[in-house]
Amino acid sequence: MVEIGPDEVDVVTLFMSLTTQWRFHGMGGRLGLINEAVRPTAKNLSIAMTTDLFLDLQMMERAALVALA
Image (tube, rainbow, N blue to C red; front, side, top):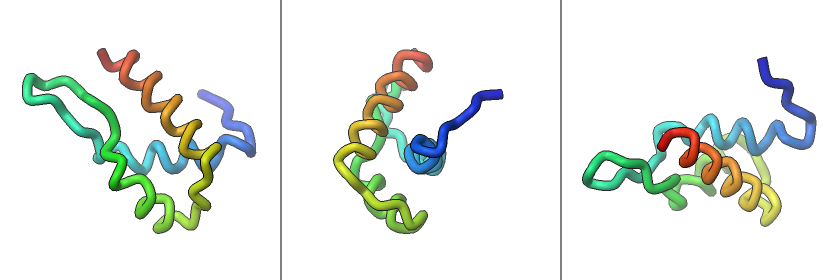
């Protein structure tokens, strides 16, 4: 089990809600999240899209790309 701090709830919730929004390379590898899906997903979840939240999301995206490679 992973413990999530109160300041991480929004970014983890958003990241997990974007699990079907990955852009794939034609050869089968993930390229990254579809950025056009981030803001509407955050809005649907009533999560305020801030610069810090976006940077945290990018950090999670990079970590996921490494883990999934």
